[in-house]
Length: 234
Image (cartoon, rainbow, N blue to C red):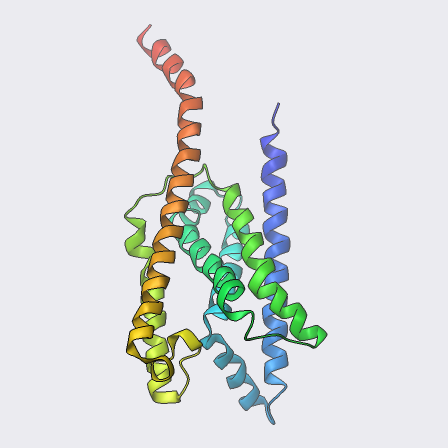
């Protein structure tokens, strides 16, 4: 017989360890970035500026979600609220971090120092894959709706707008495929089109897998529900 209490404690431990690990690496990266500056204020601002990047933001979102999941772990109502649309969105965002780096950016950034190799591996591979595994843990708890797309698309749109503002006013579009001045409008909109397609495919896949898993739970519960109704009518 499956031990749900043991599984629940295992999920709690997994999220606690992954959350602490992710926060530790993000704090380490912030401190190391700050140390490159001449004074504390400049260092602090440099650390903040490092979060202009999508990769850093999505890893931060993962760390925040894991923190909430640990805090709400023994409160099923609150945990269910963060395991729905919010977790689905963050799962898509961090998966794009993984795919975007693996497919497009890995050839452009090849760290050679132990620190650079380690942090690069963590934020681009380990955290995204570990969080995707965690998403599987909560597959059957909340039934996804296609309406979630309206919520999920908000952050990518805001980030693209931010990239344009940062490029026009501060001289950096942050990522080469978002650099309008370098690649031109045609390739820029082509890149946006590819990102939209990937986003829609990932979102649709998450909803499909979630609904199939959730449906399996409903089918398993149908005999129990039928039996309870029979008892009520008898």
